[in-house]
Length: 265
Image (cartoon, rainbow, N blue to C red; front, side, top):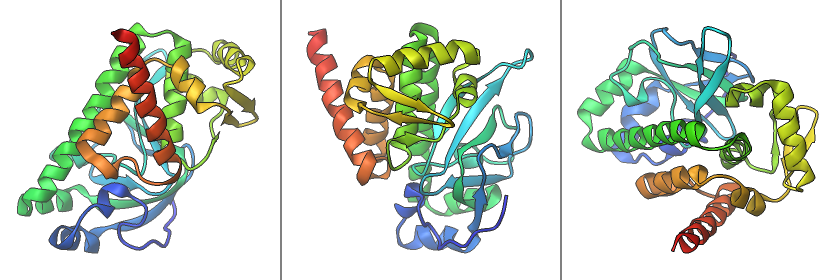
């Protein structure tokens, strides 16, 4: 990790939504930082003493690792949220590891500072309560998805979730990293990606996957991505989906939700 220059609240939608007194409570205590892909913010079992707010296109993944070395993603967090003690009372052992998926800037805040600010501000408590609800919804939907849906649909769900959090169609992810997120062998994932590429949904390159047809990807994916996105939009509103790629993605997912509801009738 290296120190980076950044103005308070720059690039994190959760922080940018704060106004007046709430901004004043947090701004003096935010520390800018920059992370590289693969950096570990904290490991499972470690005490989490700070909250990390990813900024701009920085993306962090929460991972569960098993004794046999396999791992799986439980949540993906970008500039819409926070990682660490934001949804607890702070300074408690982590149940997951937090690994940087897409490097970039972030803002860090001591967990005790956030707890004190939440104690002093009802509106700040309400904001982080709503965010905690959304993060839990993502985790629970991921559990159901992993149990009930085929690997192809799960793969598309994860890629759509990542694209929501960056600006553009090129996703900086390798086969090995994506396989780890999905909890499958790399060779198996390579066959899956080849099939999806043959269907014209995406293009696989060295260290990257390019989205070619998001609308078709949404149709081919399970409903889990759309369910989570709509919950975020309902509970957090513009904090979750603003501008550029996110706005286009939201429109696509609204259309997808309507098609699925019509098909179910």
